[in-house]
Image (cartoon, rainbow, N blue to C red; front, side, top):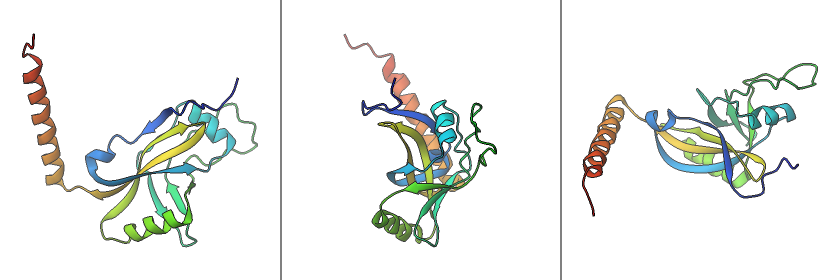
Length: 161
């Protein structure tokens, strides 16, 4: 039995469902996650939460994921469990981090995780460069979604034989 999935498929562990509701996603990128062994086992069990999670570069030119919840692994043999909401380092090339930091310097932009998944056996996170939506923007998005849903309903009943 191998732990790595070499099929190229991605196994989604956690999604940030509210991200597209509260933010307008301008760009999406993929980064690796630096995790401890018990955290990987807990993620493989499908336990994680991206609520209130965000990414930010630090002064040393590294990118960290803040407030990402991974529950402790039940069968871990470490003497002291790791903090469930500790900062986790994101693995990217230095040039990519500098490019992202330059974009984040723009007023109103933030970096939020969209989903966490395993790809070829490695833990990855999909990050979205996002701009926050105002109340009116969210209402417009809901109106468009409702109109699209109504249009799909009306076409569903049409017989095409």
